Structures are given as structure tokens and as C-alpha cells.
Amino acid sequence: MKKASWHVRLGTLEWSRYTYERPENDPLRLLGSVRRGLQVGALALNEQGQYVQVVGDFITQLNSSQISRALAKAKAPDNFSAARPPEQKAPAPIVTVKRRRSFVVAPSTPT
Image 1 (cartoon, rainbow, N blue to C red):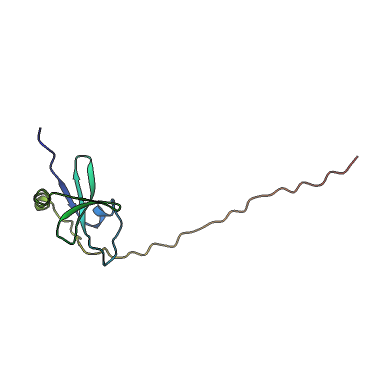
Image 2: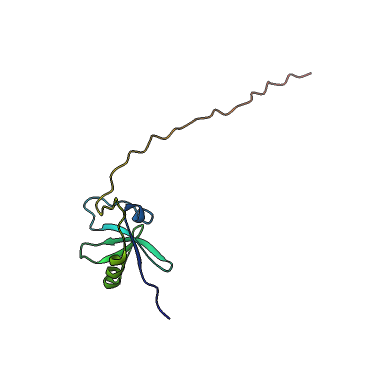
């Protein structure tokens, strides 16, 4: 039985599905996403130059030769940048506070 091969997709949109943006001094360089069967996650390079799969904060080392072959087949999107994505300002959220009705019960008078 032949094992499934790795599929790589490059770009910020791809890795942002599986992990968060790393700070500037972080040793990981996020590249895109990687998939083989049910195993999916963000593709990154660590400071030793090894390919790793990142899901949240969980890091798994990958076979570099297999990932290199998958990278050779991968096409980068037109706006691909392995560097940090440009910051986008999100609009301020609109908060609506609804008042709740309260009923005042008149005191009962003895008859």
C-alpha cells in the first residue's frame, strides 16, 4: 500500500488557519499549510532549518526530503510573502446595551 504524499500550499491565509502570528523574535518562520491524509497544519521552518508542522502551539518535526519535494510542486499565490502579513485594522465593534424591563408591584392594601 502506497503512503499518501505531502501537499503544501503557501501563503499567510494558509498558515493562519492552524496557528497564530508569531512575534518577531520567534524562531519559527511560517510558510503555509501542509497536509497528508488527515494530518494537517501550518508549515514552518525552525531555527535549525528543519521543516515542522504547527497546530496552535504543538510542533511536530517533518521529514525534510519529503517536504522539499512537496514544496517543489507547490505554487505560491500572487501575493505570497513568507514574512509577516501586513497589519489590518479591524473596525471597532458596536456594542448595544438593552435595558431590561422591571415591574414594580404595588403594595397590597388590606380590605
